[in-house]
Image (cartoon, rainbow, N blue to C red; front, side, top):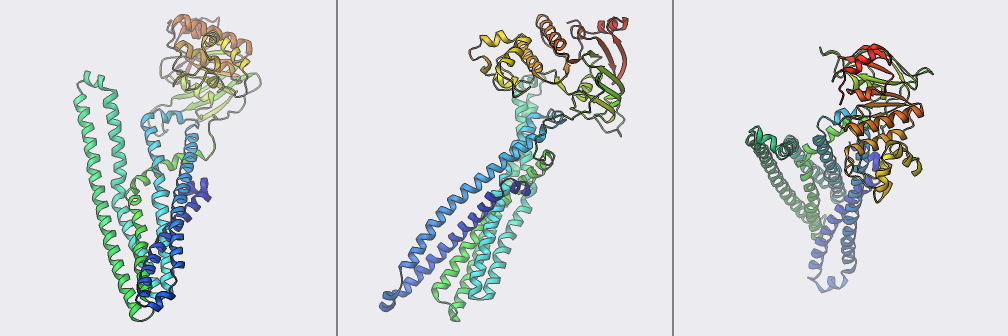
Length: 563
């Protein structure tokens, strides 16, 4: 995950680390130089001769410079680190959702879309801990410890080695202990919050059904149990934090006492004066403080680790490139739109005893042909359309098909203008082409009557249009598609008879005029009436095929629903 971060914003992230180290180092130097200056001034004041010769201006100017530099560096560090982190998270969001736009992802998203979206959002926000609360304070603290070790090494080599070992060992040791103690509780806390949110939503959204089933109190009890679980884990994390603070305070006190003893030893042996000893003590006090900044990051280590682990796989799938295109199928022979040989698909591993969703079938569809696929629910109609669209990869056999546009059962409209929804088919179309498609779909008059015309804004899911208008808008988008193969999955399901009849008539007219190949999966007689040939599927097997004019064609269509 760190590689993902630095691949997106390498220079700003490195600059942020440098500024964090400079800020911490200048803070230590400011405290140490102030102590040296106060001590030196006090000693110089004991004698008139030394007081007159003592240079007050250079140290005081240095203190002012360090104070201003620390303030500026702190501001720049916060600005750079947070801006870089937010830029990384934006890039990772884009990369992640490009990965979810790959073929077959829609099936995964349907498993629990709200829960998955909440988890993705929370995990992405949690990733900021990786840089801001772990890497930045660790680099700043270790860099400061090395600088202090170099300075004290000039006073005495053993002091340099001892201060580095003490600061690094104390700071990283306590941080490691906190991370080790909190990693599981922190991860469980994140999971418990997800569970609490999910149960609360179920309680609120499903209260009518829960009351009718006399399960409202039981669901309420489950919410209370989830809340109690969160509180218990909070108490565990609070105890770990308190112990960590106590350990840091104790270690800091021991280090300060050791610095006092070392300063006294330097003064006693004549290797340094009292001002330098004061400088050493205050530097030791200031240098241990940055390690305390690691406490929060280590306390949330489990949550950060869980987020990184869950996002690693989808980010790896994304590959940094948009994956919105379906699988490119090889072209069929010139006279055909679709050619399949022993085509088969399984939704589950072949080692399971469950049958495949689609058994091996052979199929040829001529260019310009209108075909209806019929059969009971669950027989494999939608699976076959998904294979023809390239949304699903075939597991066995050969499949060649022309590029396809797929109108699914559910009309997918977006919170955008009418123009924006239509431009999903082609981005280069002008308004005249859009109006022509709306006219062909029977929606032009309704859009003309609206105040903003093509700029009419639709709500989420096409809110603002009726069911028939939404279907017509989706049909207009299909008419704008340049693909020679049109796939439709129950295109008029849920529409009244008059609207459905008009939609189908316009669909038939447009497909015939443009020479499109039409494949419709349907349960309805009115949709199958457009077809020149009917295929019947049962339990994933192609059982019958009949062309218009044959007795079997009439028999198969009469088995369908009339409404």
